[in-house]
Amino acid sequence: MPYLLNSICTISGVFYKYAKRHGDSSILTKREMKRLILEDLLKIYHGFLLFQNPRDRKTVELTFQMLDTNGDGLVDFNEYLLLILKVAEACYSHLKPS
Image (cartoon, rainbow, N blue to C red):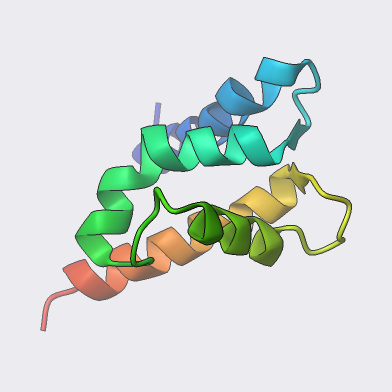
């Protein structure tokens, strides 16, 4: 499988891994989003200092509010991609040659 396609499949797979926990694999609840952050993004958060303390309840709440663009109290796949984009931007800025 081409490298980029594999990466896209991984991004999708991570979403579904957490979204399916409550039964609806098309959305993430706040609890699922917190789990995703702590289990899959914690090292990235610390490595690139995207947030001061990703374990802090307020940090998770602010992240969730930022992603929940339609205000329905859930994060759908398109909203999740906003987080992935921000993480990718931080990684790119940190890793690009000077």
